[in-house]
Image (tube, rainbow, N blue to C red):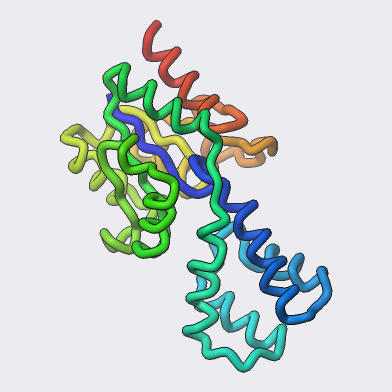
Length: 216
């Protein structure tokens, strides 16, 4: 039994950390709160290219920073603000105790995502970690899920993909032949091209339901 789980806004609260980091950055510039709101929106929950967002920031805020320096700020400044619901760790632990193989499958820069995982002590709760930059392919591509399966010594179509993103996690998982668990974060499902197998408010809720169904 294989459980592939997303990182940002699934296991860890990336949205809150980035929002706080954006507010602190804008405050240091002495700019109004609405500029933080702009930055949070332009970030698109992390799916806007860091290079693109850095360029937009440079123009929007009239900055003298090098683009490379702004990219580093976007990648790392919010990471130390990351938090995680302890129930998500407990859910991962329970899944492994029940015989599941667990892998984190995440899009993002290798250094950034590794730092998050190290900071929150996630590595000891999983059997494999696959980061898109490291392997050269990202969700929703089937290949990244195949790589996770290989690292976990199982078949691609075995198990589940759990995550918050409708396309990267749910559509990508479904197209790879997986069952999917959507972490809704309190929002309604709004697509008709990829209905998740099940939905829960948090990763802990989804993982608990996955195990409950498997035990029937």
